[in-house]
Image 1 (cartoon, rainbow, N blue to C red):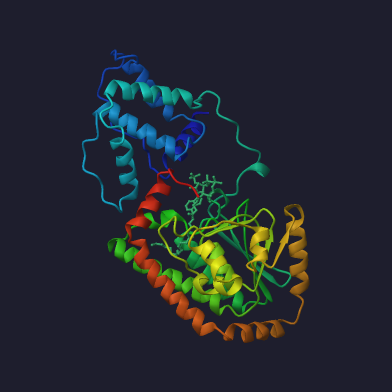
Image 2: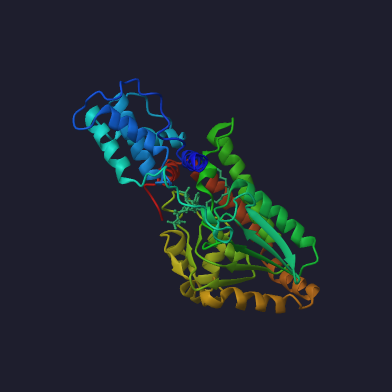
Amino acid sequence: MAVLAGRLARRWCFGLLRSPTQVPALGLHAGSPTMGTSQKDFNDAVSQVKLLNEDPGNEVKLELYALYKQATEGPCNVPKPGMLDFINKTKWDAWNALGSLSKEAARQKYVDLVSSLSTSSESPSPEAPAADRKPPEGNSLVVTSEDGITTIRLNRPTKKNALTTQMYHDIVAALQAASKDESTITVLTGSGDYYCSGNDLTNFTHLSAGGPEEMARSGEVLLRDFVDCLIDFPKPLVAVVNGPAVGISVTILGLFDVVYATDRATFHTPFSHLGQSPEGCSSYTFPKIMGSSKAAEMLLFGKKLTAQEACARGLVTEVFPDGTFQKEVWARLKAYSKLPPNAMRISKQIIRNQEKEKLHAVNAEESSILRERWLSDECMNAIASFLSRKAKL
Ligand SMILES: CCCCCCCCCC/C=C\CC(=O)SCCNC(=O)CCNC(=O)[C@H](O)C(C)(C)COP(=O)(O)OP(=O)(O)OC[C@H]1O[C@@H](n2cnc3c(N)ncnc32)[C@H](O)[C@@H]1OP(=O)(O)O
């Protein structure tokens, strides 16, 4: 039981805002009276936090962090971290927002907040049976080949299949292998309830020695190579959109040959909200597919489309009821995979060759503009906001 509680506490502490309540010893005498709440109550609450059964989410963790700092050190008295130090800046903002709240009031609020959370080191919830457990996050990409179809499956369901930098590299490698293997059709799909929530926003927190400029430069190269690989992919490429799709997972759909979607899917490109700009050649493919004003509604204003709307606009080939989606789509793909592979390959080549150069030029330009966007205040503020859990799409 203690082991399980420890494991849960550890998982909780290694979240996005790392150990917001992992703080130095209090240095106060347990039991000394304070206004309304005793120091012992406060110390007990600090201990209880580590035994929470469920992750209370980053917003609550941030609040706990800020109250703890206020209760033990008083009003925020340290310099504001730099704009790119997302996590520390977010924590600083939360502490600073408490203004001149007294230490006693902060202790009381901390104790109240902890007691409102479900705390139980005594009765941890039992482990889910094997069949109900979430798949491990280790294998973020699963590639299989069967019945003439190579399937590249995004496999980070607990993160809504957000794309880490490693996954971009792995998808490129998988596509390169698929272009040479025996299969006739290649499919991209997702595990769990989402197709993909787009670029993993924590990619922006992995600063290298070269600082933000270097990070943006390597991001530009990664993005350009990833999209180039889709432009050049020689076989029929099909997206099996098993749930909502966000950001880059939507924009690249214009480079797929066929897009099948469940009626549960939505298509969202919130670039302006994120201080970013379109990629995946969507600044070219979307106006071509749906007309310039419908494309602008998506790419400038971030209008989220239902699967039916995306189909009406030509971004999606066909929509299926969620209940029969997998069965119907895979049956159809299996039948298509038996068509003569060379004929399909040559037909794709003729279609793609009409505009291959243009697509590569668009990709280079979009990637270069994004590199500048990533260094803008608008983009950094949006990412900091997501990381602090204040903003959701
Ligand atoms: C400079 C280096 C860059 C290197 C990369 C180069 C190439 C990139 C080029 C492309 C650039 C941008 C294009 C885009 O894709 S922009 C779109 C980015 N995506 C988002 O903004 C989506 C953010 N997520 C959300 O708004 C919501 O999570 C959701 C998708 C609407 C789902 O909401 P929900 O309530 O159903 O689930 P939620 O609890 O929020 O999510 C579960 C856990 O998953 C985590 N998560 C989801 N999406 C992302 C993401 N995109 N990045 C990181 N993490 C994500 C979420 O934080 C939850 O985690 P936890 O349980 O709290 O730990």
